[in-house]
Image (cartoon, rainbow, N blue to C red; front, side, top):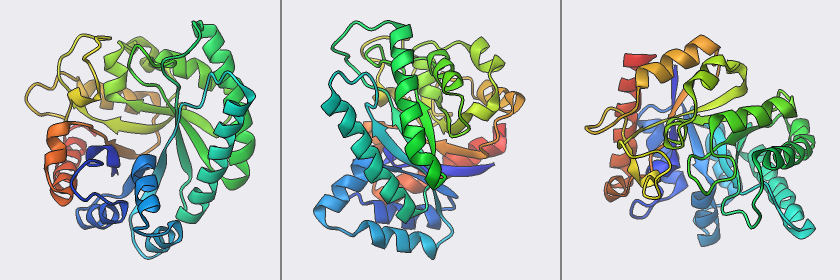
Length: 286
């Protein structure tokens, strides 16, 4: 099992830059990185480097991009202009992915919908949008990974909702990002995951979390922990065993936490700690 680093872990560390993350991830033994769109956009706008310079870096190093993370709020748009903006953003991300040799784009559902949509209405909309997206990404050999987000305000917030959507799209180019925090935070059903076909799981996000009530307003990403830290309530053996049992073939375990206390570390210290934690986790459970 290879290990990956998601820049959510250190995006707010002092003087953060994507280029430094690439160097540190390679130094501390990560195989893959999820580049966070907000980090990349921030650096490009500041003129720290060009997308072409990042692409050149990857050509001369072992570290690879696992995913472009992410195209956010892709679904349930109410106007044609909003829908067109999503597709224009996708076009730009595809351009960047081709330069960075990235073959996966994570797509994140919309939140705080202006309409009281049912689960069925949200599914129908997401299926239609993802099918249009597939037409754009397939010619480039790029896949889409739908990340359900475990918060009440998110339009797709449980594993079973995301799985139904991906099954309905019925494309080898569309799968799911399984984030352990998101799975627990809105009480996704273990039975649904255990019955799933592992080929639909494209990305596995590793994290621990404090034992907060599912669906509580204060149960946010900030409650994530390094896996195995004191207070971590997640059943890591069950996640690992279930993914193996259902045939997960992604072969990468990617750490993603958003804990403010961890942002107090230096960027390098954060990556080093993440590598130690992820490597130990894989050795113990995978």
